[in-house]
Image: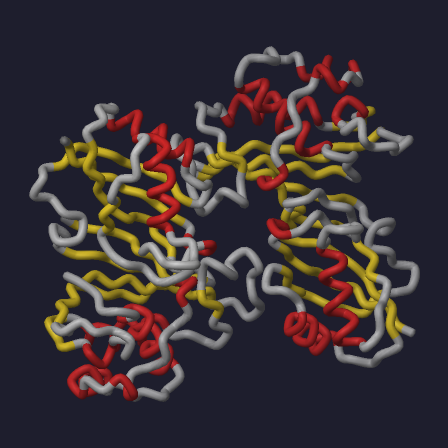
Length: 244
Length: 244
């Protein structure tokens, strides 16, 4: 038996998130189908994280255990032959049996893309949130620094979640502009359900003056979901890095 | 009666080209549907060009004649409300009645995008040709210059075409790299059916040594479709500029 540690990328537009669902196609299921073709057996695929419907991944890590002896380079080639074109394996290596893609993870980084052009861009419809109003990225970058540190983020978590420990440590956050694109990048030791999307929605409220300068700290401490912003649309969100 | 001249952009992934088809959705039909909602009448929409299935447009021009008196700025807003998200109107102005989006056009520019990474990129699947082998863009740029000038391009035209005059003037062509992306940009007074895609396929044959250095001139003069390269996939092709 051996454990393989794989890094993949996917365009999540056609999928109902990572995790296997009844009645809806998930990335995990599409991946398991390809694994079954290559390894001639339905193997358990362990992922590093759930992701929401329509969310993308520039980097997503997973592991599979197998007795089949295929060279990691050939695992990449074989899986990419059978995977749908919107999922690609970009790396594969051997891992120890105490390695787990989810529990061994030290931190994750998400990036949220906002297209800030006046008129919508048809090519970005599934790949960024379209926000047509003026956006002051420098002001938001400054205000966003209140997220940094160890906080109880239960005000930044969808009520659908039943996680008990809602304390997380945000290591860094930045709001940067590249032309008409604004990128919000957040690294944390872990994320609650919809946490990044609510953080982004809250920053947009700050941009619109619905939340005042310096008020964010208080909103985090209030642990009150109603004081944070709306949950931003999923299609702008990318799992960007997984650190072990 | 007035003539409106509109500039649009579209992601062609979901469409069977510009022109109305029986049993398949075209950009023109989707556009006419939106026009009907805004102008409360099914109007004739005249486009600047046919485009193939799955081909995109960074800039596409069209005209409509109407008696309805809506301000051009509001035409943009209203149409964008009713258009599917993969089509956007980016400009609208009044035009003279002797203006025709197709016949008044002086030249068009296409760009063809080649993703030259070793492993496929799931985000570029519908937006670029994936070419995994080494690509010498400087050599191709030099060889491509043979396309420039007025030639009978009937060797660079799909046999499905029944156009009589196959003489066209290529004004400029370039092959440029931006990281893993290679962009082939061609401007001409007009293009034959599949012409850019066959030009690109021919450049890839040159890259692979299947066509020798300096041989392209002779292939153009031969007017023999069998001597040119394969027709490159449609999803890398973008109508990029329309000059009047």
